[in-house]
Image (cartoon, rainbow, N blue to C red; front, side, top):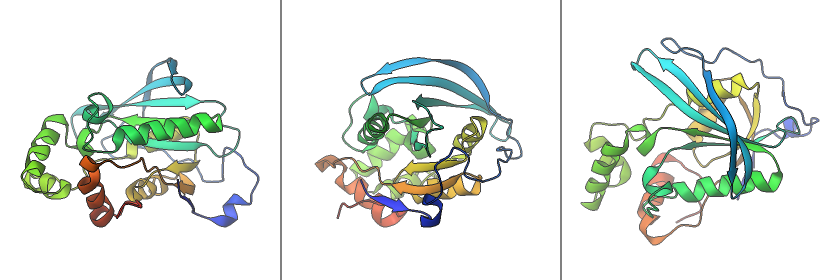
Length: 231
């Protein structure tokens, strides 16, 4: 893992939960505040996490958005480690090797377990936000030679249709406004920063690549600016 210091001066301050960023109301026009639906304990191979389900009504989209929050340990003991992860049924449930999603999730949960604390926000944004069936159509186009971005665009989608504002709203709800982010995606840093969440450290979340995912990973690096060491 590569650690990128976002602001060296901030790291010299005593560790604390609130890093001085003013907590703002984290919802846009057409979006209600988040609601905690349920909470429980989730034993995993990485440890026993607290699991909280969140929902938010999105009037603009005419739908209810939902996400899961997994918490391990005491988040007040220093600046917490955070992974914002988008659902990938094909990779995480079916074991697909076309992407690195499962490996990233497992790496993040393992790193949180090693530290003894941290959190994962798991969002239902399959296929970078285009949905499962559209994702399968994009896979079919990739089988014909298109890359992951070209396939999305051929179906009428942007390269990445995800919206990370729900993750921002959840962080505000649990009064976390300063994090160390595990991600290769610069858009997540931008979304957190714009939402009033301070990212003081960026830690790459790069799972070991496999032959089937090489083209996909190279596209993410070259065309989407993801921080990956793969050539």
